[in-house]
Every structure is written in structure tokens, then in C-alpha cells.
Image 1 (cartoon, rainbow, N blue to C red):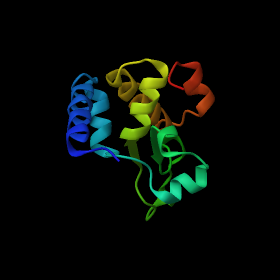
Image 2: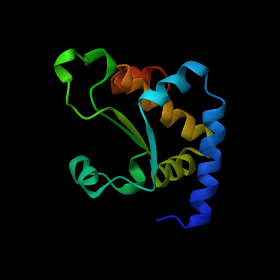
Image 3: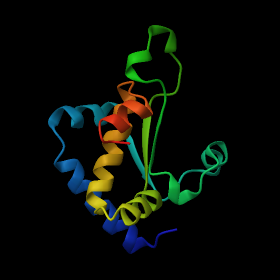
Image 4: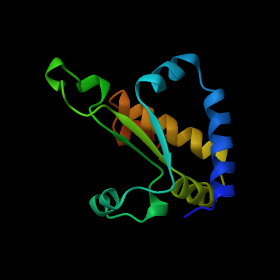
Length: 126
């Protein structure tokens, strides 16, 4: 777990990244909330068989391209960003935290638009 100062510093960088996104993505984030947490919940880790520092983000819900009127009553989409995973990925790739946050956020937004892992990888957001 991160201490309060590390969490606050991360959140400041996250807000800076958000401030530089195009207005259309700001509109999307108003409809698909972005939740920043230290690490994934235990159930997510168990399902993925991953360690907390191996998951940077998660899109949950039905992607825009697959939504229909029959989905009424289904939980809404959310995007989760995980501080510990992003910090570890930034260190492993020697990429700055700001860039790792940006890539992770855009990766998860890509899932909202129905892109799979291969399409995101091919686009440089894998």
C-alpha cells in the first residue's frame, strides 16, 4: 500500500494527465467514471492470477460497441486505474509516471470503444 503522501503525489499527476486530454475524452469520463485505487480488489487478482503490481487498469462493463437496449439494469461501465501497478510499470519500462498513467487511461478508454488487447497493442497502448 502507498502512504498518504505517495497517493496524493500520484493523484496530482493523474489530474495533470486529465487536464491535457481532449474535451471529447473529458465528456466520456463524465459518463464512464474513472476510479483510482491503490490496487485491484482480491477477487480481481484471483480471477486474473496476477500480482497487485502487474495490473495497471481495468475496464469493466459492456463496451459501447456491444451495448443494446437489452442491457437495462446492468451495472454501468467503469474504468479503474491502480496506482501500484502503474508505478511498477513505469519503473519497469523506465517511462515516466505521467506517461504510464496516460497510456493506461487511454488503453482502458480503448476497451470502452470495443478495442481488444491486440488492437490496443498494435496502436501502442498495450
